[in-house]
Length: 168
Image (cartoon, rainbow, N blue to C red; front, side):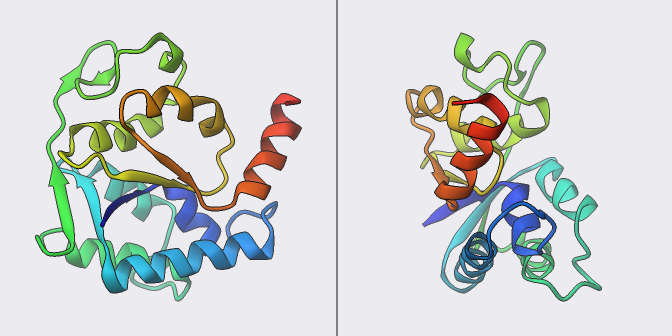
């Protein structure tokens, strides 16, 4: 199975998110380990996802679960058995042509659009793994209407964050 890993999954696995539970940290770390052992990832051909990963981790000097995953992703980005590299076409309004043209997604974070665009452009529409960014809860139904699934690895944590941030 091919998946897209949002950067916050990596940061949570690294212990770089103070507000998440220990269970969430463990879930994210185990998920990344499982991906490295038996799954595939999808990345964009411009390396924007990998660059974001590297900006927030230490893939060559760190020894945390997220650092190891980023190192693995760098080493496997050209390995067609482990990684699908998806070209993205620019779009002036939506940033990427494959990002859904949907009013409900008009306020979608610019920095996260690359994940959605890769999922939409990939022939299998791989799910996006999400750990702690509670805004995705509101976007998930609209994304599902465009065959993009978001899997929340830490549902208790993310719903708590959502209630604290948005009061619902």
